[in-house]
Amino acid sequence: MLAQHASLFVTAIAVLTFFVPDLFQWVRGTTQTVILGIIMLTMGLTLTTQDFRILAKRPLDILIGACAQFLIMPCVAYLLVHVFRLEPALALGILLVGCCPGGVSSNIMSYLCHGDVAFSVGMTCASTLLAPVMTPLLMQLTAGEIIKIDALGMFLNILIVTVIPVGIGSFLNYTFSKRKSFPTVQSLMPGLSVTCLACIVGGVISTVHDDLVARGLMLFLWTFAVVFCHNTLGYVLGYSAGRLARFNTAKKRTISIEVGMQNAGLATVLAGTFFAAQQPLTVLPCAISCAWHSISGTILAGLFLRHSPSQSSKCETT
Image 1 (cartoon, rainbow, N blue to C red):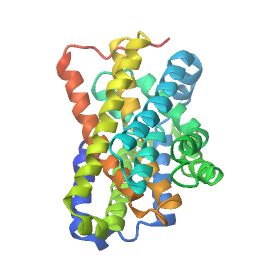
Image 2 (cartoon, rainbow, N blue to C red; image 1 turned 30 degrees about the horizontal axis):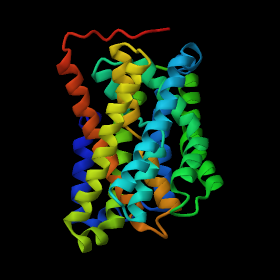
Image 3 (cartoon, one colour; image 1 turned 90 degrees about the vertical axis):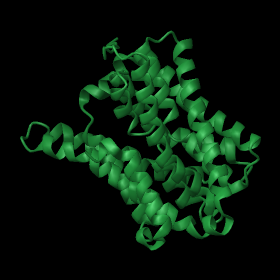
């Protein structure tokens, strides 16, 4: 139930924290990192060996998807940072979101809009596995002129909070999947993931609360405008990449959602770990993206369904 209303819940927590900033003061540093690790663990608990076999069965699809993921979003972020002439802290936040892998909830959105769910899971797995290398590398290329990037530290951090928890979750799924109680545990994972994401967003709003109050509504609106453009262009260009690759409708929908929806939770943790000490507002675009990507993903899935309500959910297996 909670997972179905993720965007509303996360947004409500963000608004509540703005008025009661002490509510999530505890979500800082190591605690924030552990919470993200739990989110990635919940993802791993839903993955099966069949999901990983997709990487071998559909290498061309996954390659095209991964290239689109790590080319489109960083390039769009870099363009927007210069077009909007963002101050360094906000620029770092947008670039960080752009350089992160695809979001966990993108798989749900692909399912809702009759996309190619197997392709979606494959893209999420691939981008998550590539993230420890690609995210620091892309940040060095796009943000190195703004601030010194600790590429090795970022590599290790992403490895610890994403790849390892996903691996542990997948191992637990493989080991205990035949037990009668395990499906019940799995059914609780989406709700736990949403709750953890809301805690991360609440922690960020708590951190930047004083800056938001001091600088007024314009800071939020200006940042949201950039987040909106980044996310929307990701959807449009992702769909265009699918067209260029001659994908069918289901796969075009999926690559659009996968490219546009980023793992903003990871971006938030990285911002807090590596940049917040020098540039506290770096976390603001990441927090806004956490909430907005869930909302926009739900809207886009609905638009896809409305455009072709009779579309079947058949997916290619080759």
